Image (cartoon, rainbow, N blue to C red; front, side, top):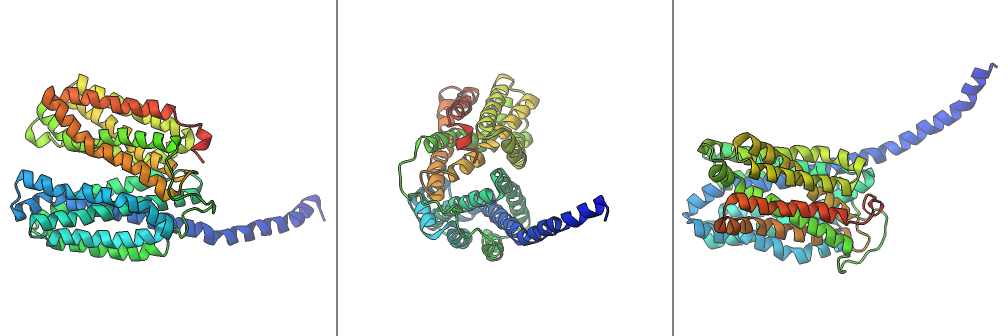
Length: 410
């Protein structure tokens, strides 16, 4: 037997053993892939459900003959429901595991959407929006806990891609809502279709969600004071979502009052911001895996700051569009990256950590728009947006003070 033949003969068992190991691991790899697909589908349906409601607000206002002030009071039911759910979210997820909470919250979320379409009074709509906000946040925390679990199985950052699907669903929901309005489909039938679709998707995905959140089996307390790292992540979420909330509510008015574009072009700034935010979320995971959490948060804050300054200093159409694009890129990665880091907390359970951080972020989302309004009333919108840039600068500073990357990029 020649040397090469002997090498082949000796190497064959090793090759066969390696091949058998690959075959053995194949089901595990497939299971993880199905985990990711299932979580992605729930993220998309979550975004589609919320966007479906948002797209029909004018129709519901008209049907119930609500004034602007009455509508504002009714809409307050949603954030109230959101906040009421916060004490329950982390506790339920820690007790029942996020898989069960996702399944129950998804069905309840879809049913509450149908409830909104059924209401014929302002009080009934308030109650339905309360339930809608309650289950929306319960699903938000539980599905993000699932995303953290899937990310740990992949052993690399994939959180931003999930949030990218939520943003993509926002576009799909807005487009579907426009089609429903143009074809005179009532909100009840519209919401019923979304609910049935969500239940079908939820049923299919339930078999492939991660069964146990803490794959390592490490016991962590359900209730505990957030440590320094969680507080830092929470404040970063607060600052970034304050910018995000202000862009949602004031970008159109900025283009109308400051840029003074034609009425048909007032939505261009918001659209540019949303396209940048959605697109960047699909690329953020790759950058994060290469440069780490701290660096991507610093770069994100710097981008948002630059975009805000460009829009303020050069209040013309093209520079402002470029500025809004940079703002969208800047805020896109912050929340998914912060959620990913919080979900790996060693001090409390994943659900509790995500609840704490998302609560702080949501406060920023709520108070951002009114603060911009107060400042604009006292001065003008350019000063408001200039003040807003302080929040994105704070993201850079707070990210620089986070613990060493080895403690966050696990």
